[in-house]
Image (cartoon, rainbow, N blue to C red; front, side):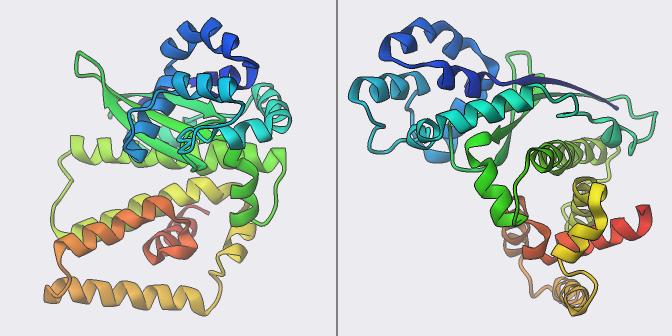
Length: 293
């Protein structure tokens, strides 16, 4: 497997560089054509169910002196923190190790010759999430995957989840905690589909979630296993409770008292939580840590 990627900071660089309504229209061609801006725009429109274009929101902001009432691209947050975000973007652009998928590629057989294409976008505008993923196909049916990191959410995200913030921690979270994590999840789905191992059976879905999410979280946390093990409290009763919950879920599936729709919806929640909030993720991380560490 080979992962090809491009880092695009247009959705951060362009909004931060604009200072007036005239500046919006001067940069209009760049705003409309930049892959990172397009990725952020399409995702924001999809997630917020709006047809509003970023360029129109920017023009309104500088004409009115404030964001629109709905502010779908969170311009108020971006521009109230402009100086800090400019400094953060400058620091990240000077980082040599913001992305590398060699650790992900090494987990798959050398005989698996699939190429994956990622656009890795840095933004300071858009929906209020630290990171999100969008997959799409071009006019020829070629599939591409976009990963977006919202720098406006960086400090509050790290302080909420990890209780601290620093540039080195942010770089590690972006590279391992998000790019490698989601890169593996996407690559694993491609691999299991290619070899015909995908299954619609509920128990297989549960086992697949344990494996794929566990390895993904291991890739996220391997740089400091002791810290994350302590953060998730995986040395005591909590781990035992996760194991009991796993056994109970397996038994419910075997008794057919857990519907397919309920399981599907429950597993989908894992895309928005860290391992301490969904037991299959934490249990999978513990299993992967035990095998790999």
